[in-house]
Amino acid sequence: MARLAFSFAVMILIMFHFSSISFASSYGSFQLGDQCSSDVECGVGLGCFKCGIDVARCVRSNITDQYSVVNNSMPFNKYAFLTTHNSYAIEGLPLHVSTQEDSIVQQLNSGVRALMLDTYDYEGDVWLCHSLDEKCFDFTKFNRAIDTFKEIFAFLTANPLEIVTLFLEDYVTSPNGLTKVFNDSGLKKFWFPVQNMPKGGQDWPLVKDMVANNHRLIVFTSAKSKQETEGIAYQWNYVLENQYGDNGVEPNECSNREESVLLTDKTKALVLVNHFSTVPVKVLSCKENSKHLIDTIQTCYLAAGNRWANFIAVNFYKRSDGGGTFQAVDKLNGELLCGRDDVHAC
Ligand SMILES: *[C@@H]1O[C@H](CO)[C@@H](O)[C@H](O)[C@H]1NC(C)=O
Ligand SMILES: *[C@@H]1O[C@H](CO)[C@@H](O)[C@H](O)[C@H]1NC(C)=O
Ligand SMILES: *[C@@H]1O[C@H](CO)[C@@H](O)[C@H](O)[C@H]1NC(C)=O
Image (cartoon, rainbow, N blue to C red; front, side, top):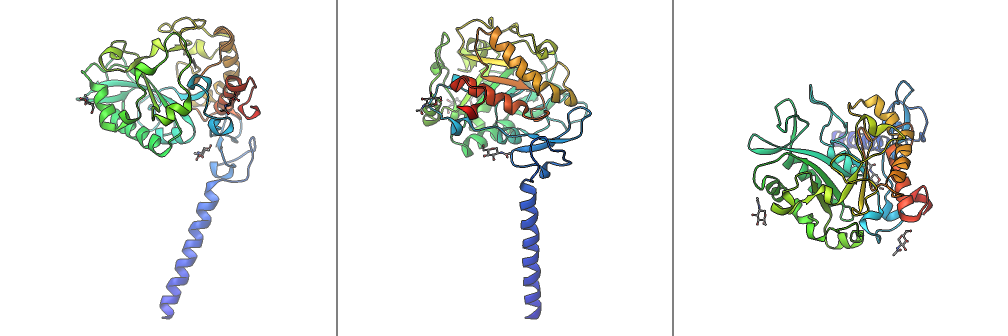
């Protein structure tokens, strides 16, 4: 009996111990801009990052939910979405060039709502690859597309008000290769049909209607023929985009990338601003994702004939010296939804 009581006491102690640990590890009390040594010290929605040679500080690491701060009654093209460039190229594989450090699941949970994925045929399957010559190799492959698609499926299932957009740089040539992966992953359930996409720059459907119809996955491919053959929207029919790479991060430059119509063209309802340099360097991304990004958004607004971006595509999306990409999305949502420079002011 005494032994039993003792074990019971130990059990209670262990439970207390663990519950206090898990409480402490959820978030700390440090504020935006405070010096820190790890994420757990920073308050909710903040993470601890270094910017260049500066000391590490608590910076924003989570999105504002624009649908709850404002509403979801507006057309899809009246909202802005954080987009990760080469979302699948995640650190950890030797010799691979990486553009992100969070898993796809972490990205989605922190508010990333558009993913740029490069799809290739490889070993009888579709792989996400950061490659060259339109071929995937062992040293350039990251993940099977099906595994990432299943993660997106799980996210959309668990978050019934959210919409995810995929931009595929698509090198898959096997017939119905992508369709099969969309089928097998379950993602077809959330498919936004290409025939419902607005032509000629008209507004998209209302977000609340997209939610009600469960049309919560928008997929664009760079392969023109697939709009006909597989019903996957050809990106350049619906989106315009500025040039990425080293010119793309010049705060006073914004011109269309080759595949896109001119930025002043009003026949596409969605605007995507790329903002990342050609060679992804984590310590440099911090500066790119800070004031530079806000400046580029402003430059692109003017270059696009007074149109604010719906998507901003970045590397290492949590790296910044303060509000970073999250603040940039707040600004865009504010401008798009109510003409203010922060969605919290709507
Ligand atoms: C980010 O904020 C949302 C609420 O806006 C919350 O549901 C989500 O859990 C947060 N994510 C992380 C990783 O803290
Ligand atoms: C995908 O699913 C649809 C509907 O279930 C089916 O008609 C089609 O043959 C499937 N395509 C592939 C390539 O798996
Ligand atoms: C949703 O928010 C927008 C922007 O503030 C506003 O114009 C619109 O009237 C709101 N719609 C509803 C149904 O509340």
